[in-house]
View 1 (cartoon, rainbow, N blue to C red):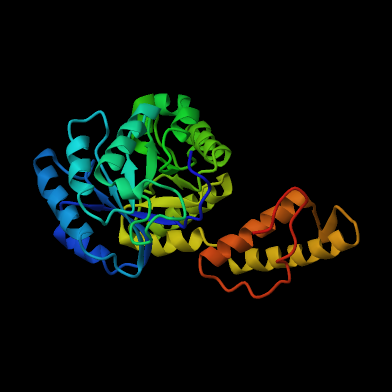
View 2 (cartoon, rainbow, N blue to C red; view 1 turned 30 degrees about the vertical axis):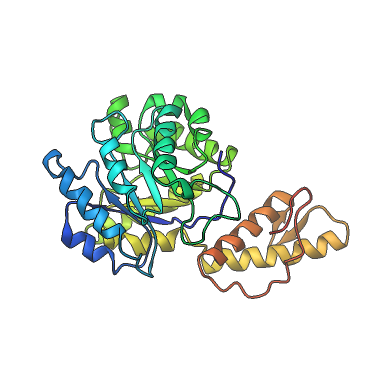
Amino acid sequence: MASARSALRRALLYVPGSSHRKIEKSQGLSVDCVIYDLEDSIRTHQKSEARANIRNLLNEPRPGRVRERAVRINSIGSRFAEDDLNEVLKTPGPDTLVVPKVNSSSDLAFVTDMVKHHQPLRHKFTSDVDAQSPPIQILAVIESAKAISNLSSICKASPYLVGLIFGAEDFALDLSLTRTPSFNQFLYARSAIVTECRANQLPSVIDLVCTKYKGPEGVKSLEFECTAGKNMGFNGKLCIHPNQVAITQRAFTPSKKEIEWAARALVAAKDADFEGRGAFTVEGQMIDAPLAGRAMSILKRAQECGKDIGDPDTADYAPEGKESE
């Protein structure tokens, strides 16, 4: 199981590996993660061309405003996955492999073995790993009832695994569900994914694609979905169009209001701790150790997102049973 590591994956943008134009455009974006796709967006006769395009791209340095370059391979059960891995892992460039339709731990075991074979210097999670060749990471896409039932073992299947992605469309197909704006039909699956990620210290838990991306209605739908996902515990979201990136990254970044509340809560918490009080009030709200811990998480996330949180004089405070970071 991977140890919990800092990861900023607010927006993960799919880019088809068969499109030179879209690949080129992606190089100029300011985005946490670009996922170059070899799976659903690529027709069978284009697979080889897409692999070559992505291989050429990954042999070049990563653009400065793209934090992470990932590749979505084809599912392990397909006849394409091994060829995808053989091609992509020839290059020094992939930061992350996105593995779709993961149904059991054996799917990730296969990918792990391939990584160890092709890039043996990128499989150790220790301090002596070359900074120029950091460990490859894996994001597993959960898209079936079988995957939900096997979540616990999937989360422990590979030392490279750093998170789960909810694939809503294939999940709906598998269970014969109709996707509605409320996403009530996905409540159990999404809650299970968030819970298992937290239980296994996987830092990234990525929500479903917003299929609407055009005009004011697309913006409204995306903002609603981002807020709902964030409230459920997701910390990032899949995107299918560049227009969705800025909105998504803003939504999964703590707001000014959240940062101000967190700073005030931690200053009050430090004072209360000095006075020996376990609970206290901030702006009419009762705050105790869990909420103080939440405030710490908000400020840490804000810093990761590049926000200036000032100096709330909270560095030495940690709720009982937690270490400050």
